[in-house]
Length: 195
Image (tube, rainbow, N blue to C red):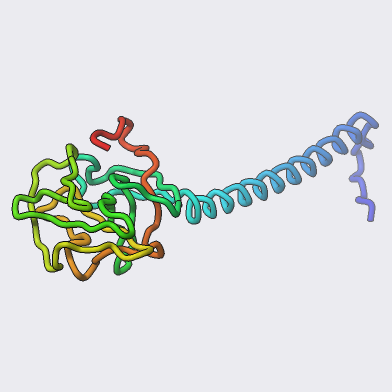
């Protein structure tokens, strides 16, 4: 329905009608652009969450069991992988907690420790320059320990306080418990030492 004009009101000019039409078209394009931008951002965020959850998890270090290599509050990017090497830093899931540990023994390896805290893999002592001090720590498993197929023997760098494969509650960790291998430390911005 057309609006009634008040007495004394002039009819709009063609220029005014065209300007109003352009404003309405601009509003419509703006809303469409805004809607598609928000939609794209939602899809990108969902993909980023999916990738970070499944392939490249990001975690924050909580605790001191890996000092001095990793400190409380460090933020790390992990990468999901099926192959690990001795010395790799990995994140494992244990009782709904995420634990950062170092891979010491691979499937089939025979791991042992002496009273001074020296670690032997397949009867050879391993060099561990990343340790602040050698220590046997709390052990309730029997050495030598043969690492079962599909499992890893892991230790923390702070052997006096770390709960790791030396404890029968954790033991050798299975592939299903491993969240990922530490790829890079992103915060604080410095190179990871002693890796």
